[in-house]
Length: 420
Image (cartoon, rainbow, N blue to C red):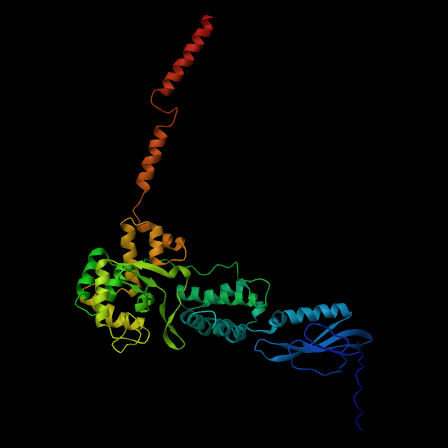
């Protein structure tokens, strides 16, 4: 006959809900599945007495799991329990894989923070580069040396490697934010370098040729606006009639047409500096007035819409409008953003101040404008060289004859001394 298992010796037991300990509540071995709820008691093992807490915490996937914490003193146990409940993610990080964190936590939480295109880029990097190669590794054990080896082993181009690393480092930054680490282990690691390539542009002659060909097209107002205002593609396609102030000769950039989970929609500009006023030439005002007379009304009140009144998709605009016009004009097949770059380059070469270009482009920082367009501005190096040369030549004590007169005066002084 099997003997009944010996009952474990249990001392005083109290139940808590959350980090506060209320010793007036006496419940033995009864748990509510609430994060932080549990019981304190005393157990004896191998002749040693320990204080114990058993309760529920939430794991990475949002599931309540049971945890037990031990310490020899009540004060030490309370300290451990407080740390566990204050940062459950950090306490569980040792068992979390990179795949679990990036797919079940990072990408899920980023849905409310990032725009659709940015989130799609992160998803691509996680699915194609991160999970297949290092997804099974523990989140807490990945070191910069491991990341360097992983990047070297990726059989993709430099730009894809840079994207993969940027996504990985962004994920680890979020892990710090939610309590998995105190510091991002990849914070000081530099990503792969990508050789900078000059964005293709059109010269002034080619720009005029494009406008000449586009003049016979129904899309001429859109192309003219793109080649004279340097607005972004999404800003032009998201321009609404309510933001046109043609009587005063300007428009306001207040929306951006972008792809979302629900299709194309008007969204807020990415930065506050993107919300700006754009002055229009007289020709642009006339073209927009004529265009609005022909434009079919649409639900969003867009200035430029398809024949059915629906928003225009950027890739379709490139494939069906811009590329055919460029081909007809015998020009290289640049993309829509190259028109913005072309306009700014021409203005920079004409001597437009970089601060003015920053306001026109809606750049958040003048550093971006300087980095991209400063080498197109007229060089002031010759004037600076002439200026410093004239300063050196006219410096006191360096004029022609000064040194000779000084030597003569010294010789005369010696002669006078000897005479005396």
